[in-house]
Image (tube, rainbow, N blue to C red; front, top):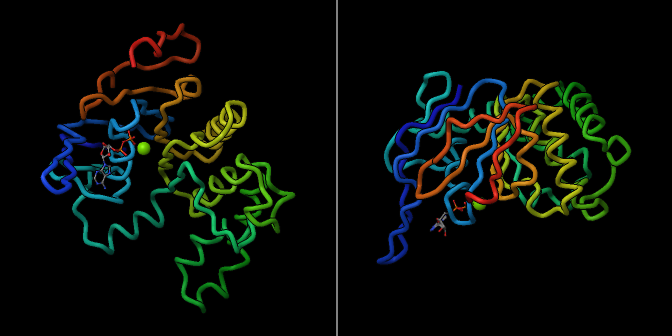
Length: 245
Ligand code: ADP
Ligand code: MG
């Protein structure tokens, strides 16, 4: 469904060039929950940004359903970002002045003109409320982010990311700011949504504890993925990852 081919990316700061991706290939299959692990600074966020057209590679290409998406004009990229991809980040990025419900509705506000919103708002509110119930926040619709715990804020961010029924959810260290138990709950939630909503998930993390809940794990090192072929079957004994990262 989503494919990266020979991606390279170098950041330049004054005279210093940081080669982050050096010819990376990746294939993401429809419906899978993939995790990408790697040390801090190995380029995980960079890769996620390129997959989600938030940034462009220096060379190589990204394909969605065999259509190239890394070189689209602004309009095409906006469309993908609004409808095809959902994004979750480590620090939630909720707007502090808005209620939980309004935060989740934000992608819909952005999509519509004032008139368009007027006629569509009932449907969107219904979808947002259902999603908030699904992530366990049905009793927090009117709360502001500062009145929520970290785990609750991330649940709200998950609901927001799913509002427009994206096909692919890109999650960048979604448990990075949470304690172990709360992080595990978020991954469990993502696992359930992957199943129930049929959303494909690419999750970046450096937390090896949480990847056992996912379908497949690939590791970034040296600007490429080093073990793309190793799949985790739910009931098979797992190799010990900590020793190899
Ligand atoms: P990770 O998410 O795995 O921690 P990143 O993709 O954020 O890694 O970053 C990879 C490397 O690229 C790091 O060395 C980082 O400092 C550098 N980097 C990331 N973004 C930029 C940028 N916008 N400008 C310059 N260097 C950057
Ligand atoms: Mg990162």
